[in-house]
Image (cartoon, rainbow, N blue to C red; front, side):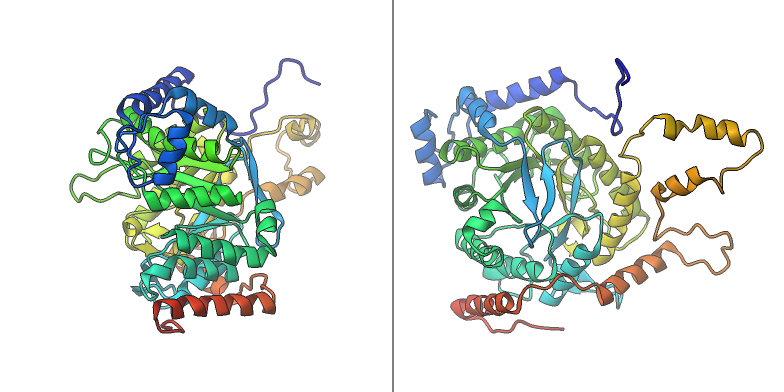
Length: 488
């Protein structure tokens, strides 16, 4: 065994020193104690906060002492495991296993890879993206949206989840519209698991709750977060502050404020349900001052998310990241630059649960083709994230000595044993003769369509499918909407 030898298992990357992290964390505690957070639409949370000693004199500025925050951080699990739909381990979140990238399904517009045209998203398109995510090896989970327009908005979130579960066996996170909708989601997932008890034991379903910047908790989101905690379902807590709009225009202030927003909800959850599994995070960004949009391709988003990752990992709590998205409306050079920068920054920072792969046009367009391109980029980045094992075999000094000057290694056993570790592209042209070579654009569309046409996910049982179809029908009947929904 080597003495006093340090092995790096991955590239080393830091944005903040330990003292800088501590300073931002202290600033967050100052905000919680001095400024406070609005909980005026959250009666259950106010009751919990009053019981533990927070100052709720003004429900629009609830003051939370630092010792309550520190205790909530202490009781938050430092690690937990997510499973796939079949109850098999998918991955563990603990701040040490690297980034797990997730796709996006159920957005407002869909760029059809078969026709090249953009149109409103239909339920069939949700099925297609879910099936694509199921097939792509570097996209390990997915997150639903509820903005697809061909289903009534009040049930769009639960319809999206149901169809993703039918066509993808990987873990799924959800955007939640209402508490009643969350109850239906848990009902659907429990049917697939076999029971609520089994769902809690092997969760493949992840809730989400979003504080509203600046410094406000939404009542419906808070109630959803509490229900997830009650049922033992992992939950993502994240806000979306924009520097210069809903947050100060300086980055340390953005980080301190969004951390305070997330921690204020964590206090409520951990005191009501100690040990509830959560992923903390935010999608901090700078507002584009020309257009006033939230720019998904902005370098500030990745920079701030990487810094926040270091802050939450210092708490030893998993981090919710963002990567693989773009402001572009078509697959072009802008897309390649923005998603590659994001994926590399995220992988280097080590954010645990990373979402928004496939999102384009500042959240209006969810692209199957971008999922395939991002999968390729993630694979490329992973080739550099595994570090370098240095030993007698990998140094190969005896082999170098044997082959000697002007020899070659192509027929050596050592080469046969190791060359399969080289990364091999599926979308990039490395041909010698370029005369009839396909472009990356051509190969990207071909691969996307081929996967959509050929990949068959593991099916749910006929009994479960029948039960889910009846549940879906009941949702439409309850709101007086036509069923089945529009098809292409």
